[in-house]
Image (tube, rainbow, N blue to C red):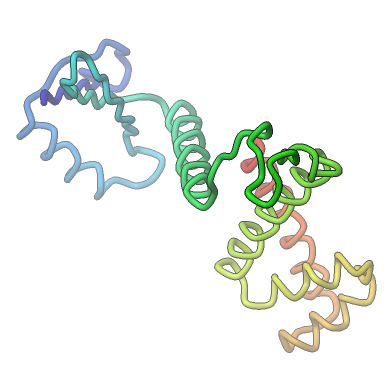
Length: 186
């Protein structure tokens, strides 16, 4: 297995140069102490050729890094969900009756797929909301029930804040959900 580290020779120059592993780790250490606006971003790619794995780590812009990270997270999430299920061919006979096939037992595939997908989106959303704010998941339930307007008083009481502050929290909550959905589906 070979590792290649490609970094920009300087921030203005877009040319990538190959550095040693020692230089790479020194650069990572320096990068971790920089403020966010001065940080350098890197992506990793693995190339498999004749059962030999080569790893390339290269410096990219912040936008390229965010796109790469979003794709990597989506792939990881999809692999995690795929492990939970077995694939069955729809034309496989059922063990109960040899004349009955699996596709004959499914009434509406589209509805089943939509329900499955919606369930996983909501599960991920609830987990993200719980990690963000302790009251956010309960507020989502109120929104789903159609109690958006009455939720302001509930939120004010729950958090021990004024109604105006609760409205501000709701705007943050709605913005959080918009950002989550945008990142989830992009």
